[in-house]
Image (cartoon, rainbow, N blue to C red):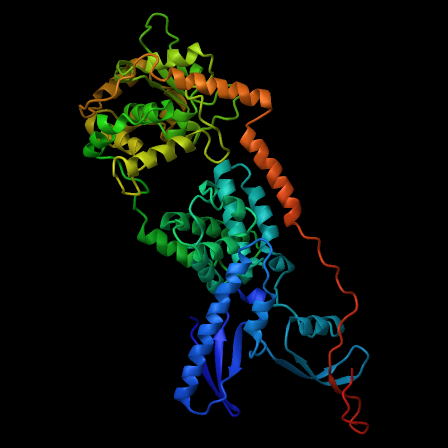
Length: 563
């Protein structure tokens, strides 16, 4: 329930209720004022509380209507405004009209009045003063310029930045960057807490949410139950991207004030500067993950092999998921046992990606992986003519091939293994491997980095010393003492039936011209979109009349209102 404020005026007691910031553009007022008709303060408080309770329910109904594609809010707005006063009553006296007459008083009660005054008395009502015209450009235009500036960054980062900037515009309105003050950012923070986590994966709502903006989605989730919302780490990432956007605007002199995110991000960075984003698995975690009773449920190639590969190589999730068959090489005829896993972008392959230039590397295949039957699995894949190691994985622009692997492993980790720490994920294998390599071996970090793909520094390592040879790398791998535990062994043909089903599915999709569900979904979206888009209402060219009290000269003052 909104908190009512009692106002004592000469005419009696009044109740004032503030309109929530996200509803002000719809209601057209900052607050509602209603005469209570009571002189006794105790009685007035009771009436005010009842009024605020009723208004609060109307606010909820309005949010509910705004969350649908075609809101019907007329009756609700009338109910909210009944008994209320306008947001602003502005009286301007002694105004000279463009024709030279003296206007005694202009009363402005609403946006329409303001528009008419701007039209007939240009210069009387102006926007906020701007030191330079560039300061008045809207955030949507600056966002386009900023995204062009980010064109050379990672696609995933660009998509996340566009998303958070659209959130800002949807929730706080499209205004010049200078106009996003601390209050606007506070409101933004309060509303994004209701945005759903991974909305594209929530089948019951995603089609409806696709028709809504972020403000409407937040309203919808707030009124719903059982929908998981974004976490603190996601919100922190949103604020960091917003801070980068405002810094860009300030440094380019697109805004006159420093970033409104400056103190907020500095405070968060100071508090959590050294806080790890991910935790390494413990030895007990590994025993639980690879427990035969648990791991026997990993009955798909992309759920069975990636955790084992990550355990023995420390490779990233997408580096494993995007492997092609020709990325597993043995090109040394004199040493047929020297298998290597090439982490690279193959010639002409746009579906492979690397985090940075140091990620391009080769990792010797650990002897334990061979013992567990990885080469036998590759033979099964090769026998069916597949190009990729995990042919059933689908590529996405945001996460490559690794999204499915990561999601399915997280579901296994939380559901079957019961490891609920949110900072323990697939990437925790890499943390465990790196920590063990750093502590359990006698090799320099630069040599370990040649396996893990971390950044190397110094002229010697960057200019003169090339990649370590296979014997040196395998010696480092063998020096990392992984815990002795029972691990699952692949039997030849174990996933052959699944691979054949994948092959048949691909052939069917190719014959049909694409994945049937996706083709049908695209057609449906195109059809629905035509229904969603409403034709704009024609703009009225004839201005509405409004009343002005005016006098021409003192001697000829008749006291009659002018128009």
